[in-house]
Length: 219
Length: 295
Image (cartoon, rainbow over all chains, first blue to last red; front, side):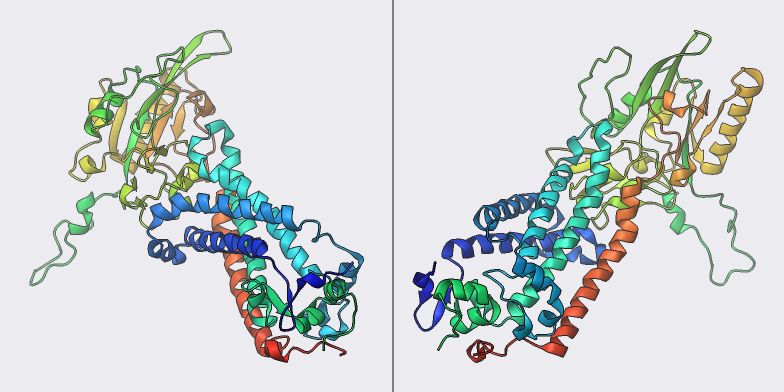
């Protein structure tokens, strides 16, 4: 089944619908706020971030609400993308060739589909970490209301919340690096929605073939 | 005590040594609560509410004389009552004045992320500065004694200040002043320890309390409130006083190894990505230049 309707003028192909881009930016915006205020609470050396963002009280008040927006957008992504994010045989081969990907020898990579194995891992890590952050975050949000006999919940949450956050920070740094610096054209795709046919063929050959119906390179 | 910084150390044009230098005794202050002479009159509860100008707090009846189940953001001092049946079937009515312990190593302070929201004075008093409190509640998690309480309207946390305003003027805390039996004492930590040990020995030698002793838990570095107990081997009987309190393990792990490992990982990650970019650069230079591979 080919999808020629996804081919847009000037040799480009639609990679993200408006719907997908909006979801991405709701998640991105809320994540950036969570990251900034979270880092402020994480270290006294970074508490100035909370001051810049309106003060510690404001940051403490809004951080949980931003967390709800973020987890809602991640759950929405799950509904949107979970099917496409299932790992396949190609992904297993892709992992084995990871060193070629890291050293920019993309010609030696197995043909990734719409999402490569790394992107899928990013998605699942954010999804799982999102659940953990939501649950531990709810405990921290209402920690003053928990009875003394439930204090183990607070003890767990103060440790689990930053660990899960650190995992997302690692993912976030790689995500920004790949999307903005390494794969030129990727950042534009999550703003304008399209990538060049050449980009599609180079980084997502499986997906390219799905749309064009042929593995012939674009003219 | 708070005027300690104004004590004279050097004097210009002065013959001889500085009068009074090194004669000051230790600065640490301490409350001593002798549970064996407490009669549960709650005068200290009233004095606390009065002096700190807090509103009348509704009481909760729990089948004992206790005013309410636990302290509140505006009720910092509470006598806990426990009817304890001893092995020989006789009854012991245990009462303990419960308030902030002013730990030498305060878990609340270690857990707090907000600059200046919790301070510890050189006299040992741990004091909350509500101006800087962000209401996160981490202090509640850090405290092994269930003391800090959140005001859900102002979103600030409150607790006993050891009447810092009185102590800084050389007065004793309000609770101490109100005690009619003299079970409450206030002074330097050394003096209170001596007095407590003396009383414990008296209880052992003359009153048949073989296990009488002093509660000054080392797990939190000692406390600014110490107790004389009839049975120091079972502090839990006194309204759940923990026998070996310490800052919760997860709070210690979070604030020490995790914090530094996390910071190292973030910094290492940023450096790693930067070096990778210098070494390998973008996968293709410009979007226009991207040519399909093998094409």
